[in-house]
Length: 247
Length: 257
Image 1 (cartoon, helix red, strand yellow):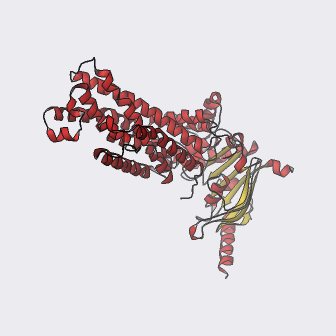
Image 2 (spheres, one colour):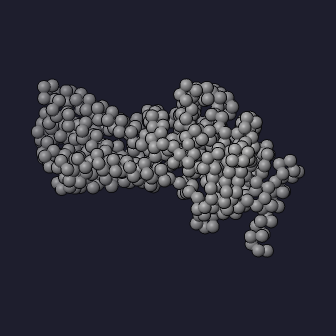
Image 3 (cartoon, one colour):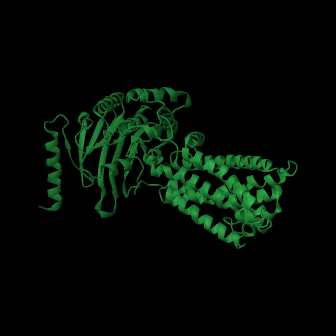
């Protein structure tokens, strides 16, 4: 195994998953290295969520291969899945439970040893600023706090691979800052972070790498340090649309 | 996730499902419906039959006219065979279908515990809850019978029919779990439950289908001698088969809708 392979938190090659109506992804390669925040940006319907679902095993692929944390996805042992944290679409939280109990349930399902659950939950609550809401029922939370809770559930166990779909949705500016700080801390500790966004939000802007997805394919990259990222993004997408329409 | 062993983490999955079930207002409501509702309905119907309402007595079957514990439990059993199937089926539809309705199903992917194991844990918690309902219902009927002035001496023989009927009914509701998975929500599970009730009740009332597992418990409730051993023996086998189908459906699940 090369050093690059061992250091990769996620490697996806030739991912194809088609849906009716020409939607889906068509041959995407993707890497997330240890310590890297990799942002996927694309318009609605570009295939970002399909891509994230594919690398987490939520969709069966028509073609392609995924390796996460050094294991083929189909053969990844429980220890590897314990080191994954994800939030794709709805927060993983149960409305009949209170915040702390819901986080504890998720921690247990993630394989956190029973004796460590309390510490892990306290960490998640502090990281996403949920102090004071520990005994509040999830069903009573605002949309923004529910999103914070979903992020805490995804990140509380300090995963080595993080996959988040549009994580800043419904977050207030303070929540975005907390999320950004947490992702930077996890990456600094060696985690690989894959995060999607339909716009160049505050999270995408802290990425080490920004990949542009359009019509189910990777159509280029943006320099995170570049000026006027938004204009560069739309130019890339527009150029791809023109190319595909043959004009 | 073929990299993890089958049933790896089943204890954890059961503990988490049990914690969710205990906190669930839906299950609390269904428990109250099953225990209090059935007893109130049965006591009312038994009182009606005892007061000489022949049409009601005819509908309640041969046990209703027996009076005493036999009469009360006979009516409870008949009400239970339909109402408990509805309650158990709705509860199971909720336990499974809520993951789709609430969008929490995405969180059940990419875990060290297989989804099929989580499905098995849901069924284990469901059967444990159903057994608890059986005990509570039996206790509630005992209290009602004593309040009606039935004697203590012959209570046990009659009351002991209630728990097995509840358990058999809980077992034949198992297809609701599979339907809720296949249809990705509560409603398909509830629809399957309603279909099961229709089949069981219609065939039991006309007195056929004693060898069909979905009918045997209802038939046994109306007239114990009419149900065949085969029909009753096939109940757990059928439940196991649908539990297997449900676990397989969870294992093959995709978020493609």
